[in-house]
Each structure stands twice: as structure tokens, then as C-alpha cells.
Image (cartoon, rainbow over all chains, first blue to last red):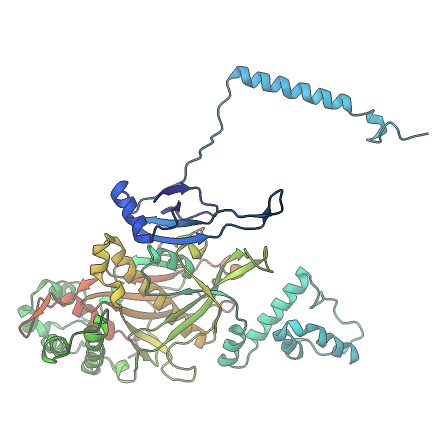
Length: 130
Length: 442
């Protein structure tokens, strides 16, 4: 029995949390699991089983199946809400790395400018002509 | 003409339009230079717009209400089934956003100030466990020559009916999860005709009313837009379709409409806006017959609604919510039932009078409902101010529908030893004032 909180692919209402759970867990199991182990008030649970596709082929042309898993949508009780946190926030760059990044970008731009041909030729390659 | 004939063959995919072509397309023009309009059959936005306009013209020009309804309900597509009696969490908020309804707690002053027991009934009223009867009597002015209302008679009538179903009649044990059908259903079915007959003298409208037992009330409407997710129509924008199929326990229909409570354009609050798809409620889609029905067909003279009585099944009784730690959802269930059922009924009444989303109502439609689980009663009043909920019509529509409602209160505390203990006068007063509600002319 395991439960894994996941970020919903489709936006869910504020009181709904999405989990991937073990295939053998039922709605009652999920409710008891959250209430007794984590002390989270659960108002309603809905589950579905996601079929993992069997279309990809490996190097031997055998079909490779992605595993099936069960998804549970848990609605929290007592008016609580949950928002899945942003696990990869934008980190503030300190001045040194920022200036290095700027320098790097400027250098790359200059290199690309050099690679381009004469601007008076309007993008036509050098080998084209008489 | 040969050109017309072969065009008709190409339109076999759009069945309704081929009929429209004969009905609504203009006749061959007299002048040599007919107006240049967009094609009606091309795969283009202008053609789609033109077909939509023809559809609107057809519905507007329909000769009778039945024809109008037939055109409006013709195309079947998957739609959300909205159940008024639902255990879904916070359903009343979702239902308010689907029907553009504002919920105002408490009953409006007009409905509560119906002809109340006159001061002549003081001897009985004084004997009553007082504050329930006394406080409303103080607040409301007696309406002109208010006839003498026999409060004690009413109370004894209610107790009689209750005891008949619970004590005098020896019934067997109810079948599993059928408590409501066993006791409270018959109680309500006996109570309402008895009260109606008792109050006929005070309210002549009740004398010409029609009482329906377990009628069907249906309504179909569009509200909002969504992008189709799967299938051959993936990526296209479709209106969101809803259908309510309700079976109230009892219903009183009257030939004259109840008076409006507030003016048509009043704004009494905010309508909740929910960005998520209705399927997150959870609400499910099905494709079946689109139906608009108030309980009787269009030709019936009693085409306006007065009061509905709803009974909750065992699934939605209070103990189940308390056991599952969902006490706050108990009131939600009552409100959701009141809002959804009354919206469907009033909107269907409006459609029976020829109004629809493109031809909005010119006068408000008012109905009442009593929602009960046998012991606890909640009262709701609904005023329908607008039917225009589709994407095009809701844009410039400032009107909102309004629902007034009370919390659920018990009618009695307990029934034991052949007597009813703790009969709540307030609930009785609300019930009676609902039944006595009538247009000002009567």
C-alpha cells in the first residue's frame, strides 16, 4: 500500500488532491490511510485505473508495456484546500553567474553574426553566383 | 430547379437543415439581383453563422409553443445530467454557477408576511408554545380583512396526519434503505392535500390548483463553452449542455402566476464563477432525449407553478453525513435541491409561455419549494429573472436569478405514546404561508 501525491495534469478544484495509489487499494482504504496515518480529514474519494499503453517497441520489436496505475482524487473535508507546490522554482542568480551568463550570451551572438554572410547579399549563400 | 435539387442531396449530413431549407430559405427573389450573402453550406465560419441564424429564425417564427420546443430540443448531443438530490460536495455552489443564481439566506419579507393568524386567534396563539407564532405576528401587519385562521385546527391536523403514519397505522418493518418510502413519503402525501383542503377557504387559488403526485420535471439548457477533448471533433468549441430530470414528491400547479418578489433587474448578490469543468463536481455526461416538462403538457390550464415538495431518499439522511464527519454538507444538500429543482421548474414554465434563451422573460417567474427528509423542513423561494445563459446571450445580460432559502428546521421533536412532542410552530407557519401565497388580485 503506497500513496504518491502527484501534480494534476488537468486543473482540479482547490479541495481536490490527486494521488497515484497501489492497485489493490480501495476508496475506503485510501480514506483510512489518510485519516489515520496523516490525520487529514477526507470528505470523498474517487478512483480510476489508468491503463498503461502497450504500443512502444524495443530494439527487438517486442511491445513494451507501460505499467497500469490507479489514480485517486481525494476531496478534503472541513473546507481545507491544497495546491500542489512548485518543485522547481526559478532560482535567483547571484551577480557573478548573471554577469557570466550575459558575457556568454554576447559571445554566442557575436559568433553567430560572424557565421552569417554579408548582410548585403540578403541571406543568399556565398556559393550562389556566377 | 435542377441546381436546387442536387444541392439538397449534398446536405444529407445535416438533416434538420434540409428541412429548414424548405421552410426558412427565402423564395426566389423577384429582382434580377438577389442580395449577396455567404454560402449556407460551405465549411466556413460565415456559413456556420448563417445556419445558426436560420435556426434562430425558425424557432422565433414557430407558430406554437410545442413547435418551438420541438426545434429547440431537436439536436441530441452528450450533456451533463444535473441531479437536484446529490451527495456531491459543495454542489450548491456549482449549481448556482450553472444557473446564474444568487442565494439569499432567509425568506423574503413578502412571502413571510402572508395573511397571518389574525389577532382574533390570540386565545389559541397564547396557548401555543409562543415565540414562533408571536414574533411573526408582531412583525407583519395584518393584510386588510384577514380571515380568521384556525391555528389550533391546523396543529391538530398536522399531528393527526403524523400520528396516523407513525403510530396508529401498524406497518411492518421498512425494507432496507426504504425508510423514506415507508413513513415520510405517505406522511407528506397525506399532509399536503389535507392542508390544501383546509386552506382552500383562505386562498381561492388553491381551489383551482392541480396537485401532482411524483410528477416529472425536466429542463434542458446551454451555459458556457468548452473545448472538445477526445474524438473526431477534438479541438472544436462546443456549448456546455445540461439537463435536469427531477421527480419531486408532490407538486401544486396553479392557473395564475405568483406575484414577483423583487423587480426584474434587481441585484442581490454575486453568482459564484467556477473555472473548472463541471465533470470535476463530479457530473457525468450522457446523450438521451432533451426534454422540457413542468408536470403537465402545454395545453393544461394550470401552467404556472406554486409549490413543490421534495423528499430525500435514505442515502441523504442526516445520520449518514454526521457519521462521515460532513455536518457542513447537510445544508448544502438542501440548498442544492432547492436551487436545481426550482430553476428547472420555473425555467420550464417560462418555456411553456414561449420564452427561451434568445427571447428572454419579460416578467419574473416565481415558485416555491419545501425540501424535507421527513422531520427537517427547509423552505425555498425562487424568482427566475433570466433564461439567457448561453455564451452569446449571457455576455450583455446583467440579470440574475434569485433563490431565497432557510436552514432546515425540525417540524417536531419526537413522536411517542400517541402524541407529538415539540411541534415547531415556526415551521408550520412557513408551510401555511407558502400555501397561502397568491397573486394580489385574488
